Image (cartoon, rainbow, N blue to C red):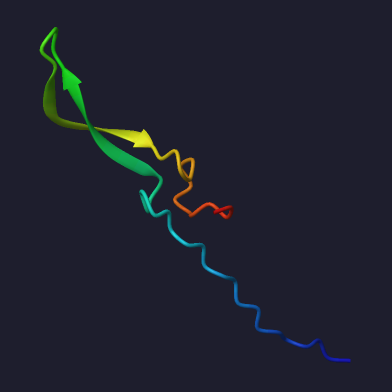
Length: 59
């Protein structure tokens, strides 16, 4: 008997609404007493999706 072929489409994961790639870029403050914003950015792990880049299933 021949094996039946089935078309199973996998659902694409929705991207995270906050980061879309797993990391967020933030500015940071430098200096002694008078903290001033640096023009540099640092990458941080997105806390919404925990770095996966996919939207969490529980809303």
